[in-house]
Length: 442
Image 1 (cartoon, rainbow, N blue to C red):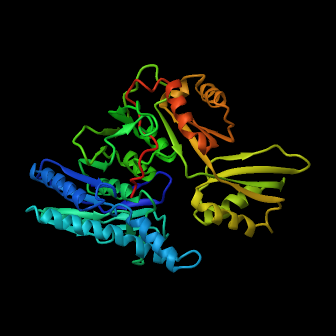
Image 2 (image 1 turned 90 degrees about the horizontal axis):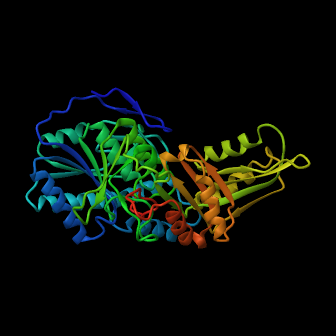
Image 3 (image 1 turned 180 degrees about the vertical axis):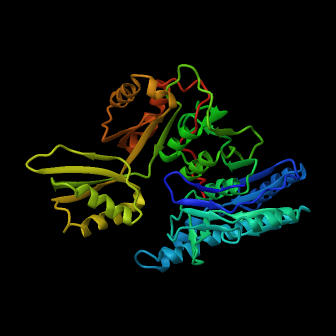
């Protein structure tokens, strides 16, 4: 029986208490991303895989994303019809239809193979969120309908990426939200496993498209995977990893196109002796905003970042220069799609914060190294600086923690930096961690 539980760095999430009857081999949550169900043939392949699992004696709850580029196509259509920034509420109404299409079609495909299946939207499945459109967080799950359908012998298909507020408003969870849907459901129904199916067969030391000698890891710790996900690894969403760590969900990443063994994400992973850095991540979704000539007095930064937080704008790396003649410059990074909103917010608080000018810069990328062994291995930072400077590349910003280090550089040099770092840290020849992979995060 579950009591009141909570996400890390998110509002408290409640799972309605219950006791699950164990009448089968296992209860498994399977999540399939947009590329896995991108067309009819891929949908059939996924249906076959789910039916195979069910006929082995497993109960299956399947979370599915919108097909292929459906979400991007819907966004483009909204831009054709709407001048300016469209209503976030109506965008949520629009975008949730993509998952509803794929989950209903998948249910039909499973039924045609002789198995019982039923599809549910996120709100029909009992997923409740905070009243925020576009980037809502799950606040509670009441999985009674899912459990009853399982008891009746159904494979249950749930639309990912969506939920409902207490006021019955439809919300979306943001890019990557289907991962979070799957892990949260797995925790709520006390599933034995949560399998994330994508177009790669596990977690690698870096993007294999950039470094062909990148190797797959058999396992990785929650903490390392959380850092990688936050730093741009597209194979898992950070909130999904947070949830898995909090509730100790048995999480596995594997390919929907092969039957290869995947990568297990767990509390403690076996560390390779002598390896301080486990993976190299990158994030192209980066822009830098600089506020110049800020009057030095207490509370200025609090006003700026408080106003940005009120508009749900996430800020990453922050750097402040020294004070000269009572003035200081400071810079911070935001997501590319938040630049215009962030600039607008800063201009609106000019009566509260005295500054000379505000500028923005794109064409940047954040490159990061991650490893639990970094804290006990001196010289890791020096190696990163030496490799990047040796390529004649300037470092614009730096951020560090116990198990990660990030540098902001120009995006045009990304590939050669990742390759050089991968070799410098001895990752070319061993199985490590996946980073910065395919954008299959709905």
